[in-house]
Image (tube, rainbow, N blue to C red; front, side):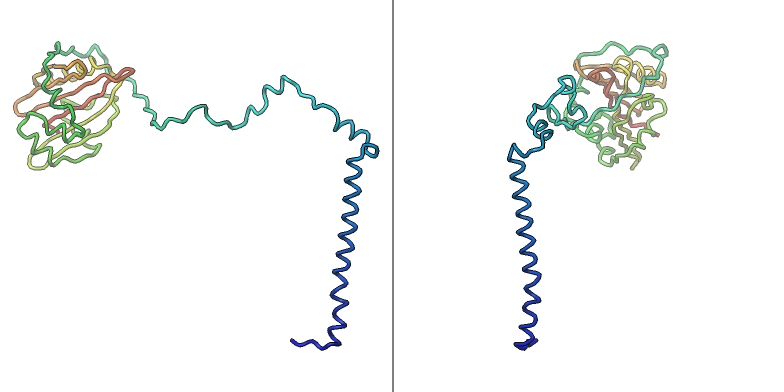
Length: 246
């Protein structure tokens, strides 16, 4: 757009007027601020009540000072643990009076030695002495449902907390392997499976390496092995293998 000289002369005063007014207001505001500063820094012009309030010491109640920030969020005194808390085991429901104690343990425990280093239930099953152990362990699958298909004569201990279960049914296999924890102490756990096994016609041998106890036996071609270890603080950790699952 092109402005003529005359139009420019008319617009120039209109443009300068707001600018001059703004400059005037800025000067007045600065004068007000200067006067306020002088009043605040000049003791002779201060308000007496304000002067007394600003010049007095702050009063602190020592009783209340001790409870200051009681609800404030504070950092922990030490780094938090990353461990997952272990849930409590259910109370042991089995009446000990219904059980027969397991026989004394032999200190020669080849089953303990063969189980050492078995990091999975499949590896534990593969190390069993039964002829079908190796072949059936190769087809093993993992699911909690296998715990419900243990032999009826050798079920999961009542109230136990299942950790893992596996099994195989291919090619005539009836392999079942479970790992669980229980509040029952180790002697009672051994007595439970000794009572169950002998009542079902299985043999029952007991051996230990001083830490782990093993109870195992056979009935014809059927076999079972129960590995029991005492839990720190009470209870038992158990691995059980059977080739006669349902």
